[in-house]
Image 1: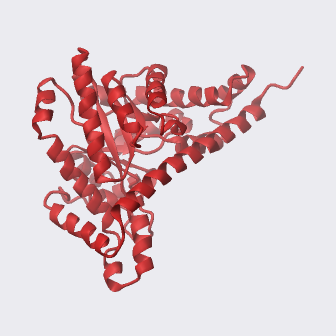
Image 2: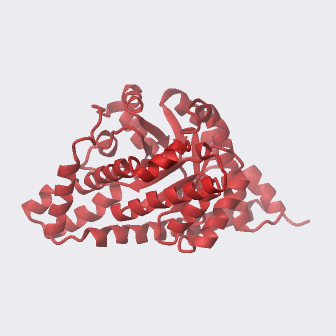
Image 3: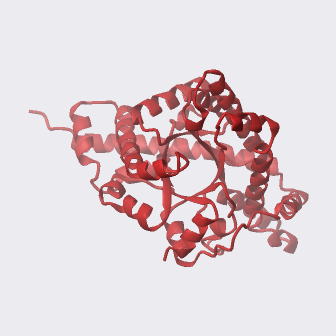
Length: 372
């Protein structure tokens, strides 16, 4: 069952799980996935925690204690989510040690309501790093316009970062620039660059969802022939940009100081269109030095019938550029699509955070001690 996952791992793709819950931790399931399915990292987001807290009774003990102390709902969420991340980080610590800090990492996101506030995002990143207090944590910061300087500040403090919600190639270059600027600040401050890590989460499936919808609206044979091509093209051109930046003279100076490359992470790799192969965004995005964070269904599908045939990004850049140009020629604006997806991404995470607040508040009320 794990041959395809082993081949993926052997090709230099780190397999991370895009999910976490108290049940997954306490049942031994996470440890099992690490042991048997080549999982070497975990990503979380507000939607994942909202689902975990609202299902089952795994959080009842902690929620009951928090209710008894009459903490605010925001504080309860932070106590619950950082506890899960801390425990998951401890389970993944052997992987972290074995890979010299490259993998074995767990991501936790800043409050998405702060996405357009640089100073608040940086302050929250520092607070989360302190709360979790594990060297194998990544703090997730969205790649909004306000998030870019926050990435530099946070990296400059020596805090490792997962930059999330990247859709556009231009914004991705800004993210890499912000990372290098942060490393330069950290170096000037005398910090050990070898301890600072980062991934850049480039979102995949949502690009196809939006562009395919517009191609369907055009409805010509030419438009239909381009369906399912834009997301892979976008991600492959992102890898080209990664290769360029991390072979530059600017990078060489940081490399000499033992800095780590910021790895591209393929996020949103669960297929949204049921007519596409369910392992499409795994099989077709294989290249060394990348991460693929998968929902469990995609992980299981890859284990069962993924087709890992070696590097599927090398040699594709010309075709990838041609595919995006062809979409543009049909009147679909790339810049319009990626900006819409970024705006929607922030809105979705904010809505999930609000759902998380409501779910947690309801649980605190349910478990509050009766008077008397």
